[in-house]
Image (tube, rainbow, N blue to C red; front, side):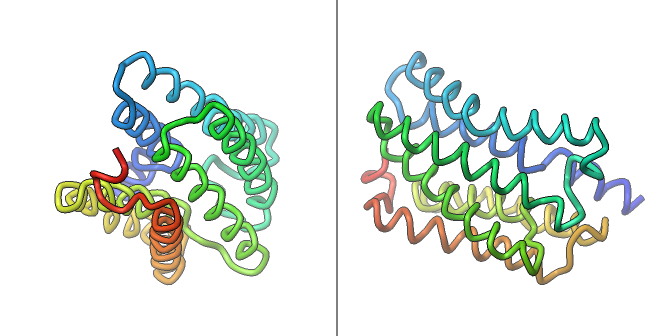
Length: 200
């Protein structure tokens, strides 16, 4: 029963689905019109989330990866590299199109975290499930304060599911969450986006 619950939690609250939902939410929240929100959503998803997801599915289909949620540390290197390149391209596009600052800062934070995790991955494995969740929660807290803090309830069950399924240790889940949150705080501070009034 615990294994089944952990599997469902890990599958539903996975980095791909969470990043997709978060990107769409931020895109609509940071713009004044639905058309602009849709435009930024499609751009962010099309340049970052979709390419990485399709490559992972292709590699799993070709038995190059052992699963969508990559358990083998060495198999993550290519995905980290691809994600980094896609996110760099997205940063350039967002900057050139003068995207809302919140979206640009979020993408810069995502790139920074990906690069840090890619370096760590050469010797150790970070939980991307908890990293994505904690990073998203941190952004919501920085932008919306107490209201955003309610989203933090998602992080513990995600961490538990990864440990229960033996994909990560407690240290790997905690490290992913803390590093991601720290990177977001630093990047948003540098962009002057601390607090709802400054960000939206």
